[in-house]
Amino acid sequence: MLRLTGSPTKLCDGLTRRDLLHVGGLGAFGLTLPSFLKLKATASDTGGLRPPLRSDSSFGKAKACILLFPYGSPPQHETFDPKPDAPAEVQGELKSIPSVLPGVRVCELLPRIAKIMDRVTVVRSVTHPYPDHGVAYAVSGIPTYTPALETAPRDGRHWPFIGSVVDFLEAKRTGDHTPAVPRNVGLPWLLNARTDLPIVSAGPYAAFLGQGFDPVWANYEGEGKKIAPKYGEGQKKEYMDPFAACGLDGQFKLSSTGELPPEVPAARLNDRRSLLAQFDAARARSAPTAHDKFREMAYSVLTTNKMREALDVGREPLAVRERYGATLFGQSCLCARRLVEAGSKFVTVFWDGFGQFSGCAWDTHANHYPRLKEYLLPGFDLAFPALLLDLESRGLLDETLVIWMSEHGRTPKIDPKPKGAGRHHWSKVYSVAMAGGGTARGKIVGSSDKLGGEVRDIPVSPKDILATAFHALGIDVHTTVPDAQGKPAHIAGDGKVRPEVFA
Image 1 (cartoon, rainbow, N blue to C red):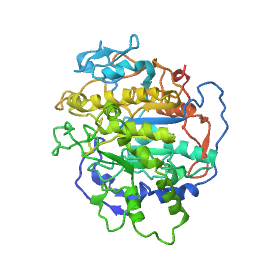
Image 2 (image 1 turned 60 degrees about the vertical axis):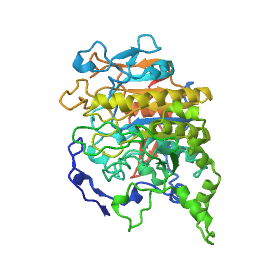
Image 3 (image 1 turned 120 degrees about the vertical axis):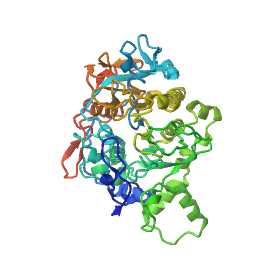
Image 4 (image 1 turned 60 degrees about the horizontal axis):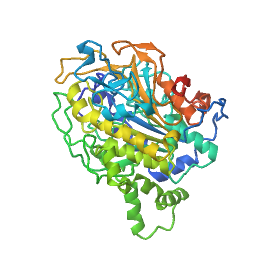
């Protein structure tokens, strides 16, 4: 057991760091490639894979999915559901602009997104009862949620991540447990691995499917080029955040997370080396005479260069890289497109925290407007349309489902007390955007009330979003997998396919 000590820093839900610092060794949270392959090969062959029950044209239109997850949760009012007629304390400093869809407006700082809304379906009525940071609730079929689970990635109560389910079922269908390019990849690094809180967030893990179906994580190596706006007045340090700006010389490599030697102190939790670098060093020496078959398989995967090349965004023309934006989110979106082209089935891009955890990324409890104006919205407005248009130009958008979703929304009423104002957690209604993969083009599903605080019509749960994604990927939502007790668990929990997204 790795016991970490530290100051009682408060999280936004009121817990302290000391409440959360009983965690297992780093090996609990990631895998080296040989370990990954070994777990794949020994994964349970039981489960409830079923033939599709639906025959409508939307079923199985998507061959792959790119999940874009802005950690901390964007405000619906300053993205896809502005309220131009609401009182000032709701509408806020930012106004709205018309999009290419008649009658549909978006935030004024999203002019590029406004031009591609005819390719997007926005669900404006997503709702659930947990206004907390619940990545695990949003991306798995787990039926209930507690904040304690969010800091316990290997707790036995977790359900498997959607990408892990896709990987598991595809391995079962094809019999291929070790594809040259992993089917389930996470970018740009292990979630919450680059903040001052020495834990990782739950959610993107395989739970009772077994660690062999965890995402294979990339590891971004590159420096931030811009100081990000502060999270709040109490922030003592400033951070050169690559999500604010990064150099185009940064690189994505395979992570070597997973096997922390006992002599390595906890302070080096975030200092992960690339598995490719390890392999290159090993290859330069005389090869050992005995490897187990799984290490041989790992070397075989690496020496094909397919994964290495997919991660190498430097192979893209400079003009393409610039269109995505010189930010880590932009370059991660470009990398996701390359991985899908190379054969990955499910790629997740997290807009993660960097430096400080409390109030990080899109969790704008304070300094809301400076962060939106200088940091968050400009990067989103470059990368999201660039990804959709790039996929479209390559003939891939119709077969690639792209989802922009987070844990919850933010309060309809602005809190004027913090410097730069703030919006707090709100799960009664928020927005999720979907594009490609058979989804409708240029459609709004559901609506919120005049203040953007309650669902007005067509309530949609996060489980419904997962069920709809499975459907698009050709996986029947009634499919079950064995839980920790061997009982059948529905892959999207109680989620239902939303035909409105496709019509």
